[in-house]
Image 1 (cartoon, helix red, strand yellow):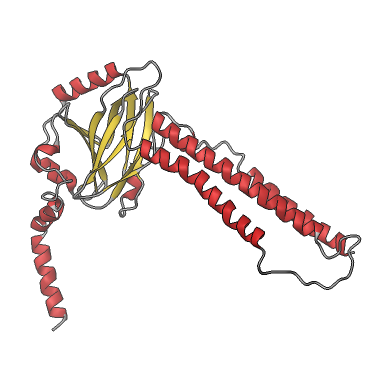
Image 2 (image 1 turned 60 degrees about the horizontal axis):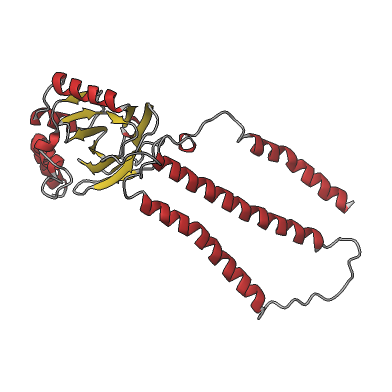
Length: 315
């Protein structure tokens, strides 16, 4: 009777197991598992390696667990009544095993992870038979809640969209005008933080032409969900054509217009035939508080009234 009861309990868990299993069989396509460049490819390989490695650990643990509970169950056939007097202390062999095995696991996960992280701090290497190309430098500046992409070599700037050539490394120089953000283009690689008063570098590359989604992956207020942009990866010839059109047709970005764009809010796509780097560089200590100073001047009357109200409330 007891064995039948246990069997019924296990059979009762079968529908739940099927639901959990089938929930992963949908048609959802994860962008990070469909890499479009060498950086994303190396990160994909690391993810797959880690998943298979951890799956192997899970399988071993569950096999041993099942073996132990079946072999040493209380109602097993042929079990003899005897005093249970286990030796729980001083088993050197067991202590060595449960110390060495986790140590080996950590090493086998750490070595490829650290190697990949160091490789990502430099431009991607060209493929076999390909000529090395100098990275295209793009300053990616975040502001609540928009993105500014400055091309210093081409002397143009875009807002909330980005054009890049394929098969050429892109050196993103990341900073922020105000709150901390993180630039992330899942199809091309992982994210890195944008912070005011400093600069971080992120190397990415697109090997396939197409339009990719980019966004801010660090929550920074009510406009966080809308702080997105499009990345247009195209051939070198098409990229140069776009650059020339922007240089000839886009308006100039004045300091006044840039200050307007820095105010918190959502904006549409724009393009300019110069960059804001002529007026301010948010990664420097001198300009780290640029936005705060502009807001302080703009809202000085409101700040003055606030200080008066605060003083009166304590009297």
